[in-house]
Image (cartoon, rainbow, N blue to C red; front, side):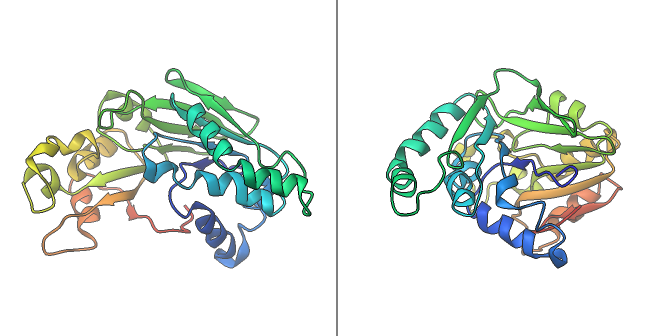
Length: 261
């Protein structure tokens, strides 16, 4: 968030519960900034279900808690179809809440899709400029990461996928880089959980030491790991942090729900 205005990224399962948890943590310091009425902008990296399945919660539940402004949904081609499909699926709920005994106002449920046709600046206001960059992820035609620039910090949310020039360029000078990551074992060995048909795992998630080298070359301030594919054997909960730290000497943090950076 910038100046207590939230800019959300992706909508996985439990997004609304996660927002509520963050609002109630940290002695309530985020409660006002995460008020339902302020949850009006979200940026989708790609359209895998684990990044979008919570979108209905974000579209409708804040409305039931007082949000009276439409939701702007930015994302790759296909975002409009996703949003329109959700609105149609919940038409009965909308009609009941507006026309029924609740008599709710008729704006807070609405959502507008903004499809990103090509990389570049996709949003700016008086607080932040947001730039989308492409990042290969499986067979998606479009999968984005986002670079946020405010008056005092640059934050890069890498999304999911491989390394590559656009990711490396976006990461340059970032104060915070949030990235997915997978264990070296996943990219170098055939294991009981990985079939030969999966091919190159780095088409889906960047390998730990590769990520460390990219962050080091980009002179990143702090590297934050999420969407972790940890296949260490025997299992070590710190395996990915340790692997990334072999090639990146700066701070490396394994993120948890409700963390503040």
